[in-house]
Amino acid sequence: MCPKSEPLFPLLRIARLRMEIDGEGVTSLVAGTGCPLSCKWCLNAAVLRQPPTPVTARELYDRVKIDDLYFRATGGGITFGGGEALLHAAFFRAFREVCGDNWHICAETSLHVPRGLVETAAETVDGFVIDIKDMNSEIYRRYTGGDAGLVQENLAYLLGKVGPERLLVRVPLIPDFNTPADCDTSEQKLRAMGVTRIDRFSYIRREV
Ligand code: SF4
Image (cartoon, rainbow, N blue to C red):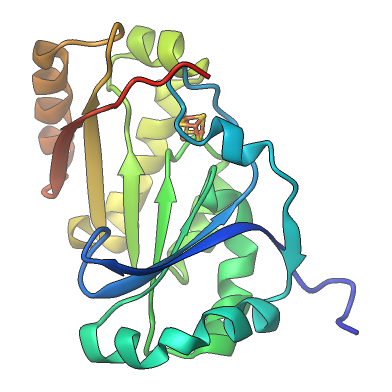
C-alpha cells in the first residue's frame, strides 16, 4: 500500500524500443491521459478517451525496466507523452527517485500549462519536445482553443532555466490552419527567442 500523497500516473499505454525519435538512443513512450487543448486534428483523441491504469512510480518502473540495458547502452530512457505530459510533472520527480540518474527522461508537451508545472518538470526532465503549433495567436486559438501567450511565456521561462540544448521545438504545417509562410514566421520568432533546435514537419489530417 502506498502513501496517499504518492503521485500516480494515469497510464494509457507503453510503446517500447523506439529509436532516436525524441533524442538519442532507445526510448519507451509512456502515454498518460489529460490535455488542456482541443486541437482540430488531434491524433490522440481516441486514445485519450480510453480508461487509464493509475500506477505509482515503482509500478511503472517495474513495467519498463526490461529495457534498462538498451537505455544505458544508448543514452535513451523514458519519454512521457499523452496528452499533455506536464500535467503529471510531480510524478516525474517520484519516477526519477526510483529509476536513478542513468535514464534520460523526456517530456512531450504543448507548454499550455500553468507555470508551476513547468517549474516542477524542469527539475527532473532532461529533454523537452515542444509542439508549439503556431506562434501566431489567432492561428493558435483557432486550431487549439488555447492561448499562445501562455505557451510563449513558458517557453521563454524554460529557455532561461534549462537552456536551448534541452529543448526541441516542433513547428508543424497544419492543414487548413497555417501555411508554409506562417511556419517560416514561427521559426523566425522562435530563433529570435533563442531556440536553436527546431523540427519542421506536416501534420497528418485525420477526422475524429
Ligand atoms: S495538444 Fe496534442 S494531445 Fe492535446 S489536443 Fe492537441 S494534439 Fe491532441
